[in-house]
Image (cartoon, rainbow, N blue to C red; front, side, top):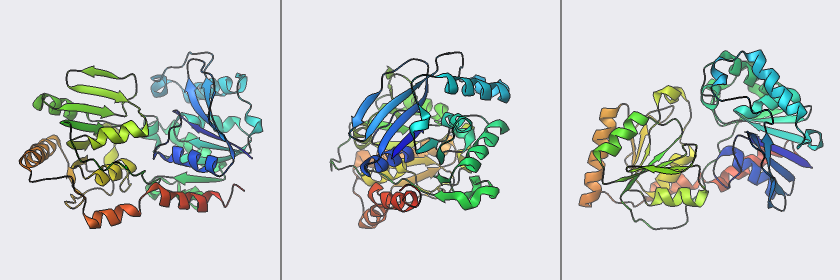
Length: 354
């Protein structure tokens, strides 16, 4: 059986839902292709493992730019993507028994495919497209309608009522960090996306002696003063960067409306908690209350964030706060690992993919 998994970025062994699904299917001995949709230059395919191949979709016209999603008429966007999909010469979609589409640009493929489709709803459309246009909401609903079922990382506030019976909530969990080192290199780690840049700049200026490592911001890696932009990095580097930090920050921006996002603890939060690092998070969804045992500190505005950070750094310097993880937190984390989540994936996907 051949399965195509479509995402907006390359496959890596991470706790992202679409990467977990790709790993799960490849380990089940299916023939899996992971397609990046889309890029503006041709990239040669590559073999990742015996059952897993990385493909790249090439926009051979190269006219489209990201800002067009905000103002270009919907019918033009549909025509453009339909044209480049139907006229490309590198991928034969007809050979796949199943196609799994991640939220974001991959959903443009739906109207051009006759394959059986599974939709992976990782983010609401206003985040995956960074736009509140109703056009994208309608485009997503069309994909859900066409899909055999939808595996969603979001709670039912984002489920279209008409399709609630075909949507399965499936959280990917996290991949534990094996190294037990509790050292710190004097850095503050920021994890995107949807970063509150005003807050990051305030922190970088207030604490010039701390390196500010920013993970997940797209683009090339570069350094500006004490801001270190790492981009999308491997799981190993991701975990090591977090493990070496004094404090970890997840500074969601109001621009991305994360306050409305009804989700519980995401993989990035769980990884931070496992490391025993103080974790500062902008209140969102179910994450509204500070949990001292997990070293999870919640703030609502810049003033609260800066006050908490200053207090935490002083406690670390004085030895009042360490990076130990309590027994209760360890027990909580054991149920949230990717290994346990894989069992949920097996139960969900095995009903359909046989």
